[in-house]
Amino acid sequence: MSQVRLRFAPSPTGFLHVGGARTALFNWLLARKQQGKFILRIEDTDVARSTQESVDAILEGMSWLGLDWDEGPFYQSDNFPLYKEYVQKLLETGKAYKCYCSAEDLDAKREKALKEGGKPKYDGTCRELPLQPDDGRPYVVRFKAPQQGTTCWNDLIKGKISFENSELDDLIIQRTDGTPTYNFVVVIDDATMGITTVIRGDDHVNNTPRQILLYEALGSRVPSFAHVPMILGADKARLSKRHGATSVMAYRDMGFLPEAMVNYLVRLGWSCGDEEIFSLEELIQKFSIENVGRSAGVFNPDKLLWLNAHYIKNGDPVRLAGLLTPFLKERGVDPEGGPDLVAVVKTLQERAKTMLELADGALFYYRADFAYDEKGAAKFFNPETPALLSGLMERLEALGSFGLEAIEALFKEICEEKGIKLGQIGPAVRLALSGTTASPGIYEMIQVLGKEETRKRLERAIAQIGR
Image (cartoon, rainbow, N blue to C red):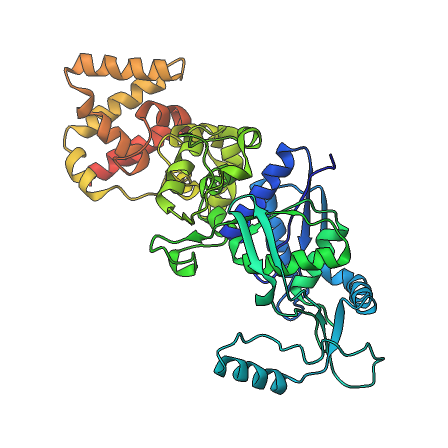
């Protein structure tokens, strides 16, 4: 059995969007599962709309998701001589022909066909003309498609699909300016690269019969096809910018982790029992294209957020600290000049849903000039508070070990000695150290801030209450 070869072939006319990323992921997973090759091809034949910036954005998006490729990136624009060669082959074997009909002629033919209740397809005026040398007249090259019979394939997702050949047009494979068309170059590329399986969006279903006929005309092996359903917004319309971000990198900038995005995308259409959370290794092991559903997936931002919170909560604090640094720097904070960032992350990751929340939650560790929450201050900064905070300060200074257990034991001692509950001192300490009443655990905060910074913050709160 020959090696499985799959490809992802985006057009560089924008960012890597959610739908494209899912298609890339499905191809990548199948290639990895079957020990095949995953090839990246950039379909940049639309020279006017293709940009290097878009190519870079696509490569960046794939790298961020962890979808490494084995071959490529290959660029269609490098292959124009090859496409010309194949057009010539089809012309010489009578499987394609030059069509000299003008745009006006074609419009008139379409109108006439529609008026007569027919299909607005090319009527074959030039189909039987003998091949002539170029004489200065403009022409397109059309593929001479069979006019009888049926073209069908067994789609790995949708099952058997068939088209009557009489419904299909004589496809233009080369424009008047000599450039090849999309449906033609895709076939040449897939054939010459030995692609065995094509997984793509189901907006390509109507292209497939035309492409199959081209493979057959070229004597090339026809790959297996799998057409993945669209991704819809909550209103069941095709996912677009009005539903929120559609670019993969926008989700990175919004504080999502790549593993959450991968896990979410694969579950948009594919299922494995009731399981929700998968590592990449598990996905490679369990993924099968036959288990991709036939109906469209609905993009649910809340589900993505839930997954992201799971991965932050269970993530490696060292890695999260590295990912958090740029978000802190965007907020004007250099973590080098403050508490250990890994220790900070450990106190926050339990409750943060995104890296943005993690960054916002970490700010108080690095900025001591915060304002106190007004409601919290009115409630917990009262006349008894300065004496309690001063007493705590002295006891913390004298503490030998600054471990969590020792700090917790100290609070218990103070409460017992003064005959108070933790609720009579805890919220004031929390407010003094973080400026808010909803912060990480008090003992963890004190440990991370250290003796000196804790003392400074308690002194600042005492001064504030005395005003």
